[in-house]
Every structure is written in structure tokens, then in C-alpha cells.
Image 1 (cartoon, rainbow, N blue to C red):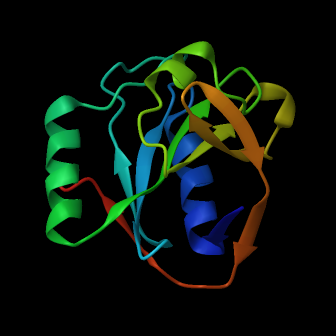
Image 2 (image 1 turned 45 degrees about the vertical axis):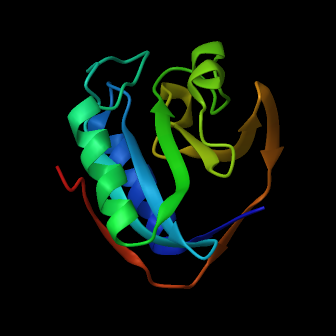
Length: 145
């Protein structure tokens, strides 16, 4: 189960809406199995159908997480025209077996709403998990790069 503070849930959805029609992407770091801070990343692909972390920004993020004793808690991105379910490409690129993979759909038929779903992706196997929104208050921010 993904337990996520309301502020981080809202921040992921806002990022997805703001970057629409391109896919948004980012990371929520974690400490001790709990979410810590959200870092919006730039979609280097600048595409409505694909996302790609900038390699220099991703390296800076991992160094920063290492310095803070953090780990990737959530890796998120948006789908702008389809449901919030991992594509074959998403599954192939999933390389953090301990992370929650969150997808936010901002497809047109949802109107002002957004669909947010969470998955575990391990060795190509996708398992959807429930999302529980809490009242905690962690930090949000931008990429350290």
C-alpha cells in the first residue's frame, strides 16, 4: 500500500496538470520507508507520450538522496491521453524494485479531475496497490540540479 500525505498527492496532480500536454515526471524521496520530499524533474523528452529524466539531473538527485540517507520512495509521471496504467516502456524502465510507481492521468475525459494510481513493478511484473492519503506534512521542492 502506498501511504502518501495529501500535500504530496496534490503536488503530483498539480505538476501533471501544469506540464500537460507533455508528460510530467518526478520523485518523492523517502527516509525509513516514509515519504520525505517531492522533487519535480524536467521531462527531457518534452513529449506528450513519453518521459525521460535528464541524466545530469537524475545523477544530481541520486547524489543528493545519498547525502541525505534517502531513497526513491515514489517515482511518478503522468499520462496525458491514456489511463494511469504503466505502458510497456514504463515497465521496461522500472529499475527501483523498492519504489512505488505512481501514474497520474490528465486525459481529457476526466475534465478537472485526475486519476492517480500506484504500482509495484518488479522484474517486469506489475502489481497495482491501494493508495491511502494521510494528513502528514512533508516537504516539496524542485530538482537539486
